[in-house]
Image (cartoon, rainbow, N blue to C red; front, side):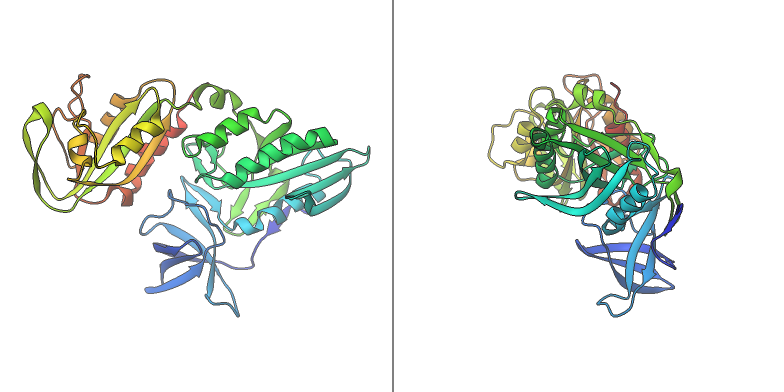
Length: 379
């Protein structure tokens, strides 16, 4: 029985510079800039900050001399080579590290049924047929694993299909492999993909499981110590809603003066502004409205989003309770300044618009605030 599974024989440390595209990242290594292939098409936003450590393995006869293997986050190694995830899961299966599957007769990979293909088909000794789809989860913050890190129509399709195949005699599973030692529990990232959360709720015929890998170093995994962690369906049931709070990141390309309703004419320095709001009826509709240039000016923020500034990013935080004030208070501590009274007419807050000289999207501490609120949900 194999316990230690090693993906590659060697690794080298490098520091992140930028991401060219979905498949190529730039790093600083031994004082030189290099490019490496990244076998992971996820956003990986929580790792992509200048100077963040990554681990690469040298490769031969390839367009790039290096391949990204892993990184670090909150004190844990994080496996990024998601192409290897099905190999890892296969080893977990055949070495009998999942008590749920100890009477396997055959294992078939890449099984196609109709117009769908699934990662594994297990034929059990008792004749049971089991379909398994494996999802790699690299996003794990404060012990909470979440998938997906970007909207996934393919992921939603898999749940629907597996749910339907129960009528054809298959037992269906989706396994979320959390590639971080710190994971304590898992739930679908409905902040990012609301529809995925709703499809997850409707997949009654699908057995959802989450596994935490025991990663020893940038390339090694202890298969024996693979641990099942809870899938918190109750958090989804309570908080997968169109209600919630949101954060807009606006870029101001030059110093301007702008009339802001009853607040009067205000000065706005060149830089970036972070606006915090809430929508307790329809989060998507509210944010879509903010992106429109032509609209009736109802809120303070409308005077900026109508043309004075550009929205460059938005974050949705879905939950049934209103956290707008607390969220704004946590951001104000990181800001260079705040515009007194902006967006806070109906609450007793100093401001809901905060100024940053530099792009907050390039600040790891700012992104941590967003993830703190996304993962602090209770059932």
